[in-house]
Image (cartoon, rainbow, N blue to C red; front, side):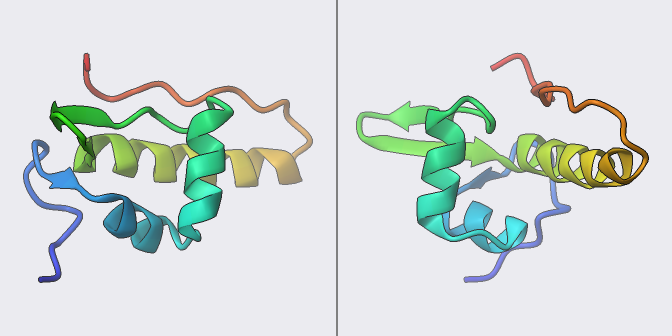
Amino acid sequence: MQRNIDGPEKDLLTKREVADYLRLKIKTLDRLVESGQFFEPVEVSPGIKLWTAEDVAVYRAWRERQHRLKKADVPAEKPKRATGL
């Protein structure tokens, strides 16, 4: 089932959905999380970890901003989580 990423802010996304939305391979997403460059998922139940659509959208906007700043030769900063999770 395909979901719209721009839906309600509390929508939770699987690793595959996040990777598809960000146009990343799952392995790349895992590396970003492990290195602290992407938000840790929320554990919604034992063994089930998901991301909020809002956090993923914030990261994507941050990444696009960093791309524009890189062209302007401005130092990068770490993304800030949208929610208090």
